[in-house]
Image 1: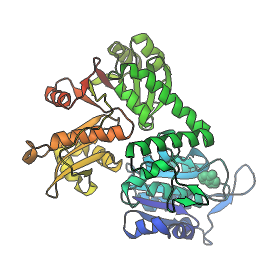
Image 2 (image 1 turned 90 degrees about the vertical axis):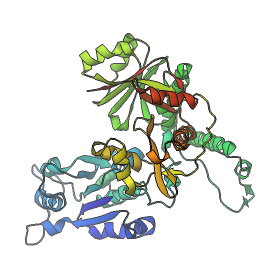
Image 3 (image 1 turned 45 degrees about the vertical axis):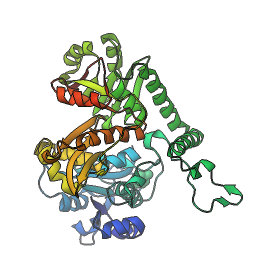
Length: 461
Ligand code: ADE
């Protein structure tokens, strides 16, 4: 991950990155932070970069030319390959954990810091892809917001934090704040560590942590708690037909999707930064009602109502790309796993996955899945023997076993690993299987997954 920060105060960026985890990540070359001094690109003999505002008004504005040339020094001349360029400004969309996750997937990020009264709008129009604010207050410049973003994004880059786990169960996952934590001594100022944490009972500890997370979210962030409760209640209602609605229930329970509108057993939600819409309902009338709540401009609509397909086609231009069976694991108990050595897939071995999962066309998708920590490898004698993953939408699959190991337990272990992984996250494990893939369906049934009555339809614009 390479951050390029365009600034009038490069030392602020350098010194902000010269401590603790960021310093270590830079030393290990896991991230690079390059502060570029905009003033160096001024064509003025006094290196001036600002001027008065046309139309009057207080203060000075940063001029277009030095900003543009500084940006060009990174972006190069290829118009088709503009890097993602974030202008930090109080007028932008608010920086959130979700946005940090999205930015963490980029290889290069340009962050443009303003000063004085802002920057000439014409250069912003040409180079900026995102305007981001770190909160509703005004700072003297963009350097502190840039550092805040670099910090939040870097800790999501694989390897930057000591253990992969620490970036997972934390505040804002699933709209809940993080549970309270305790370290030694067992009693301090007459306050004892909650007994359950000393019990060694993993299940009880998880349940306790979840309850505590809910309590403090309700107390300190009622806005988030409301969203959480709405999703939980909808998921509960939809669970009357758990198998048919599994993809929606899972997305709501794990926080993968944001609920847009729901009543009874009909619901519409969006996920993946608005590009994917999930919808479930029983008939075309309900579906039409839900589609009236369609926000932004999704690329994919996933639903389970066959009657809706002609409406989606004629009114919205979405056609069925895949019709699938939905198989669902309806129990809450983890599956046994024979093959123990399964771990997050190492990104430096991506070529093996590309060669065995759809070729070059799938490279960026596979990379994104690996970076999100939802793609896994099984090892045998220190070598990758197979892999599996969770699709962006949340369904389990992407299963591959090296021909050398086809008759071993590796395939079923990988599949069971995914089921357990999903359960641990409070989800409903499910897979979507094309109607023609009977072999896969058989395997799922053997593992104890049930096939839903309704098919699911992946529709695309
Ligand atoms: N520049 C000045 N204030 C800011 C803020 N709140 N967020 C991002 N950039 C800023």
